[in-house]
Length: 137
View: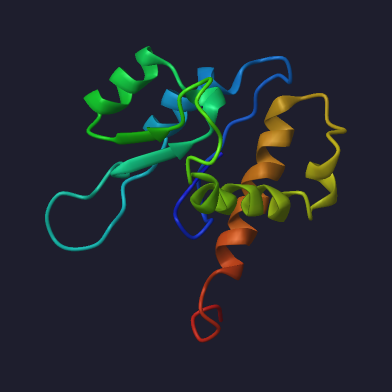
């Protein structure tokens, strides 16, 4: 899952449990939809990407830089206390919001398309809850 700075999910994917998360990073970055705003070209991708040590690799750094994204990923075997934990807690909070939904806490579905549908619904509910009170109705 990739979120914005407020914890709103931008892109999600469902993979097998025994698959490394780094294999899905570039696909998730490419899956971020364009952001509408001012007139002109819509913004497609974030300016920087924060991740933990498990996402560090030279190949993925090059891929992110080719997409004009600054990676802020702690290098492996570097001392802890890089300061990224102060900013990465937003993703952990979003994951806990997803786990509030019973069907996502424990995966009972055998088909991944059904699980992806429940994940998409939960992300829609998270986005809906983040709307200001005067806009939700």
